[in-house]
Length: 544
Image (cartoon, rainbow, N blue to C red; front, side, top):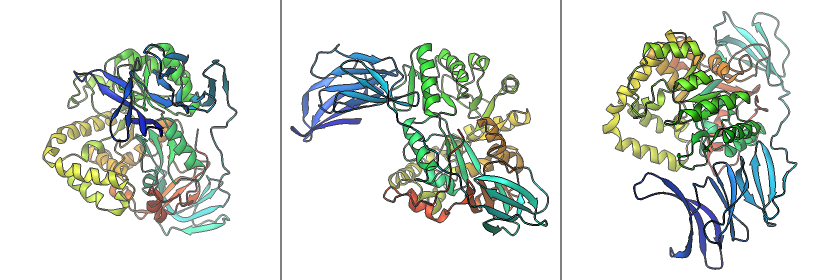
């Protein structure tokens, strides 16, 4: 349910509800009005389709809503059938002004339409920000380097203007810097990139940064909220990783109307969605369609015209032919939902020849397995995990884990096949990148690296999945996920060498983002809803 408006004269609330028919198959949006004492007001509005966004006018007599990306209005006092389409779209997040105009977001622009005349115009509002780069220089002295490739000896790494300016052997004359940090042989690696998360409200931005995850790529999110968090992080108002947003899931019309779903009815609408997402700042597109292959295939073609890669759970011939970029999760997804079948050899060959990257997300299965559940419970008892979650969320997870212990064994077969599929793809030369798909466990990416080593990758190969491989998959190779001259200065300093034991990626001495040292101790407090941002975040504008 979503509250839409309040009527003080009779103490009533208007809200939207997504309900199912008597057979529980077909979801339908309904707009209802109820008094504070629980009694219903006489009217209930039944829109002709599922409503994705709804907004009640300031006068309380007209409802604006989005359905399949199109913007509609309906007079609440009129009979059913009085609904009127204002624009074909795409339109998102409509909001009323007192003069009966509607504001909405489309293709990265703030638009205004007069609901009486239909006149449209673009409002001259800059929907992005850019702040100066870090000017103070920092020298990392006596560092062991994993770039991620290992470098012999100790090195000096000079950071200036948010970038890596030089790499020199430590025995040479040190470069001038405003600040010098003597690492005394500690290991420096690139900041981690998590390539599969869902940036919904409550995502622990601060927790990701605390654990050395300096970049997060979304595999489906609510769009505008994620962009708002991206801008908050880049402007220094909130600590967090660099965000690579997707802006939503592209799905067929029979999917439920939820803020993260972009329901496509035809090819033209798909093209409009891609223009919108590109303008909004999306860096990749998530297609999610189990039963209608045309949606995913045409989504790939439309996204590629906008220069955007596409990722999907599924592996269909039409999608492969259209140029699918990434396969999410190293498991099959069939119509029956069973994911226990191992990859066939011809599947491996298709993935390899098509150049499709696989995103490994084994940790989302591991946390519910016999081995993973006790470890997850223990992790939730640690303040460096639970303090980054909303208290109500942490308590919900604890209760769920207590109830689900009997079902833990059922997850083991899924985890086993995912491990086998991942190493089989890796041995065939298919690029593997690391993701989590489970943001309730803030150090989850580190656990994913452990699972990759358990599957059969070496510690160095596992490290690449969350650094250089991940950067290449995002199209930022040479700028992120590496330690080289000219690269962005996102780094993690470790107490020990992870090539000896991959678990040592969790022994973090310092996190550096954009050339400045992050105050990790302040991040748990900054993550709490009641606490304002501490202002210790030092990132600059992200890579677009």
